[in-house]
Image 1 (tube, helix red, strand yellow):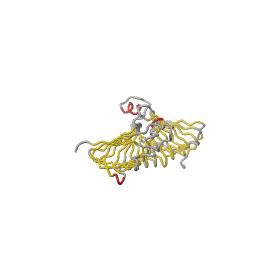
Image 2: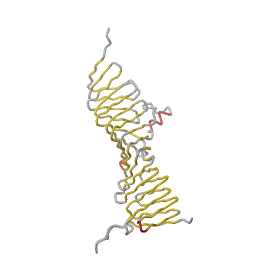
Image 3: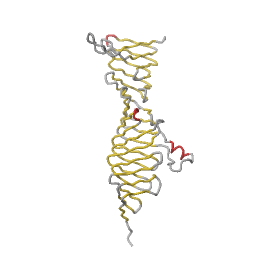
Image 4: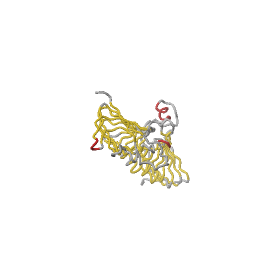
Length: 287
């Protein structure tokens, strides 16, 4: 069947006499087959459906477009092998729902998202096409390895950890591409090799290449390492060197020692750690 395409103008409210309105946005939609259901204010695009606007691009097998009697688009539904991007973040899944009024695109059906820091899976992925942000529900995130991790894996950087990956799970993830940050909320767990960090909130920062540089956990933090257990109000992770710094009534237990101080720092997997303004309690075995 010959290629069919259509250009739909997003028509706003009629302008008042003498008042200049900004140029209307456009959405271009194409597919191998188009069925226009005028009485239902709906169009159906089948086979290689493609949506393009200045805010997003979307590909799928089948597309439904719902609009008003004036042909103003209200919403778009995409089905089958959905791939979408907002020029900043990418997502894919089995279905997607776009609300033209809010600019929010919801992707469901085993959705996955790609962003500057890595990849993430969840139950739902939302792309805010106007703010250039992504929100993921119940995210399972795998972050890109850092320069230091790569060098260490190759026997290079002496200060770096040999662990190349950071995995994070939480209740929600918000990706802020313009500021090169991502924020996790709700029962956050960050795993970096033998180290596990638990906290209510976590914010990660990347460089321009999308590699994780540091992460800050807040709201009451617990750290489990193969050598020790620690807790504090805040934890700063230097991912390049594998150093974690605890502040806010920090304390750490290792073996028979229990230490408190104003600031505690250590490298994951190493016995050495530093405590400022230290107070130590040793548990002595009975004779």
